[in-house]
Image (cartoon, rainbow, N blue to C red; front, top):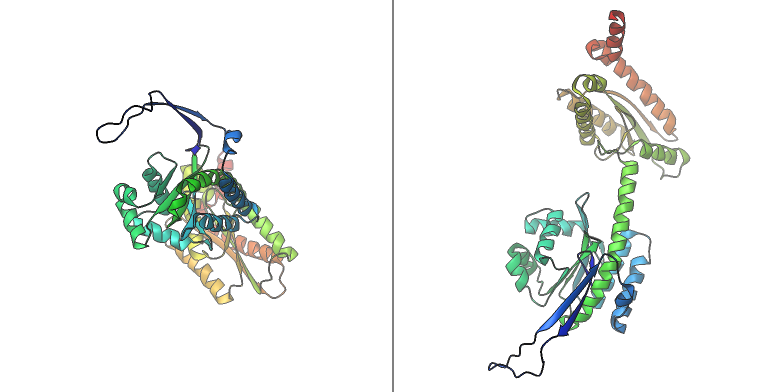
Length: 391
């Protein structure tokens, strides 16, 4: 069996005579020697020794898991198949990403994030904390297969009350681990309890299959995130911007009736880096990105360079576009440290994305020049010239 990332195999060997007379109350005590072997790697010969019913069920689950390329569709199809095999009212797969602490709740109908947050709210915690509490309820086991909810009532009364509220009478909670790392749970409610041992063997093998798929998806998602999202500010990075520009320039992206481009350059970053250190500069960049997210939260925001941000507003009315720019300036004016030089361009119809960017960039530099005219003490170019004279 796959338990908490280790492969376990146990043997029970009798060491006393099983034909001894029972006690007065009718019970009989038999002593056995229990030998447990564990390893990091799967023993494929042992895993293949299962009944025809279990083998058929696992094969069907494996087919559903790999039938389509889309991860969420594959998880939904797998949840539907497990629900059918368990003859259950409900079945879902609850994925857990320990790096980002993101969770996803997927049932036969697809991703159900509202349900995810409803469950968390009823338990008085975050979705990731729900996963940690479920792991605690498992009490170092890899699964719970319960014909009633007595164990849950004892170990987590708040979760028990939530289950009762939703008319859950029995439950299977099977953790999904890849090596020693938790990546999710199989969650089944109101299942056919007469098939308990068959379901345990089936879900044990199913958790092994799911673990590989979920971990692979999380790894690819992490690589995609790191290749397209700026690590410091958590907005899209220059690679993502270049790809988007190519899409818009080539016509591969959906046609958009209008395009608004904003270049926002953070004033004074070099001064902060030089005088207070790069940690202070990083905090300033993060604060600047936060203001951009407030003003342009539903638009495409990119960090194009060290202190330069670019925003694409697609299908946004021009008056709304200008309101967002005004909001950004107002937000910056109300901070003690963030100041932007802003240039923008708005166009409709048959526009050229590169020309629009160039125009917005030129207007941004005019705005920056005016800023340093009004605040010469923050112009590092003037300070450099003065230093040269002193030298």
